[in-house]
Amino acid sequence: MDSTPHHQQGIAMSSRKDEKTRINRVITRTGDDGQTGLADGSRVAKDHPRIEALGSLDELNSALGVLRAHPLDEDLDRLIENLQQWLFDIGGELAIPATATLTDAELVEIESQADLINAELPPLKEFVLPGGNADAAWCHHCRTVARRAERRLVTLAAEEKVNPVSLAILNRLGDLLFIMARLINLRAETPESQWVRREDR
Image 1 (cartoon, rainbow, N blue to C red):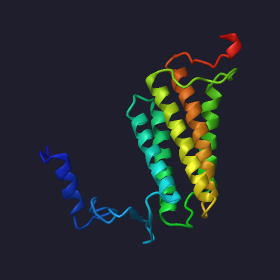
Image 2: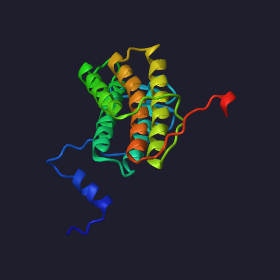
Image 3: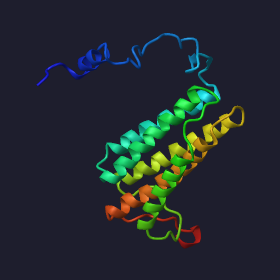
């Protein structure tokens, strides 16, 4: 068994000549003036709408990573990993302005996954309060982060060209995470708390 510490293994792997180094330095000091670089070589302010959108996508991806750290069913774990991959794809589009990677095929895929999940769920009679078990509650949190990422992308799209499919995917993602949270509670046999009208409380 290799006794090399994990962080040293990572360094050794990145130095192999037969492997292409993707990122060889994390601390660059080039952003100390409040500017950051895009993949096309241009530099923009760190509070530019494009960077705000990228940061929101990164935050969403991290939140999904925390969700995957929960003991989820295998089918949901695979689905969330696919979502994380797509978020990186959208980030790649934003890092190179006026490019489009995602197509209607991904949009159809996310909609079909939503249909499969929805088929397992009982109909909603009232609004659902975010919560349930810990896994579902975090999934609801991911949903709200997804909605914020969508808003940031809409802000950017008002100023610059954005792939409309990516906008649609983020919109569907918020819906998907909502029904996924419901499914997690259903499979765990955890009751959903529903909003009760004020006059009925």
